[in-house]
Image (cartoon, rainbow over all chains, first blue to last red; front, side, top):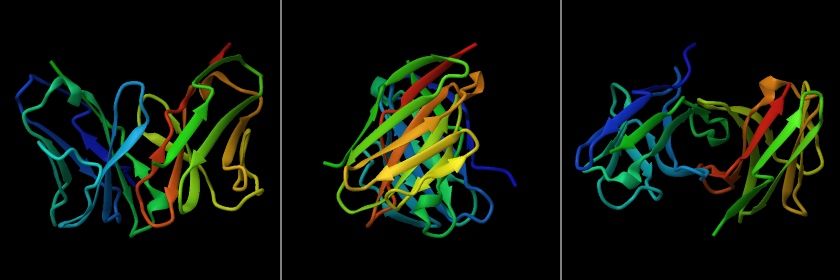
Length: 114
Length: 111
């Protein structure tokens, strides 16, 4: 039973480019959460999605960031026109149903903006 | 604003030592407190604590919650180099699903 998969593991983008981060939840999990970990900071919640629905995006920056979890395929976190301050580790977690206390984390995508 | 504070921020011990990691929180509508171990990859789940005073134990690791004083401790006895990691504490509010993490305690166990 594969865990939460994220790719790529490392992503380098120049300022102004787009970054696409992918997350495949654990088998049988239909709820996905994205967190961001800035250097020297704890993980911060960004967005919570179910299939085809954004449930809570209160932690997402208002501009340039978007997330989706289509009926088929992985969840995508998209960052447009990246800036240096977007450099961070982005973690995805999934849970079975709405059991948020059972969030299993992926290995993260480390985004570096040059 | 809800707050989760972990201490110490970093710790260096020798193999065989016992360590105690602290997590205090100011969170409205508290539901559960969770501990994770983060090596250079995914945070992995250690414990979930919901009730005060009940110790959770797994091998050399144990944890307990004090809901009156709003804190939890994670104990590791007879530490090994493989225990070196960042230990994260997170609080889950009653009305949500967004884990509220502390900054973590970085533990280094030297041989």
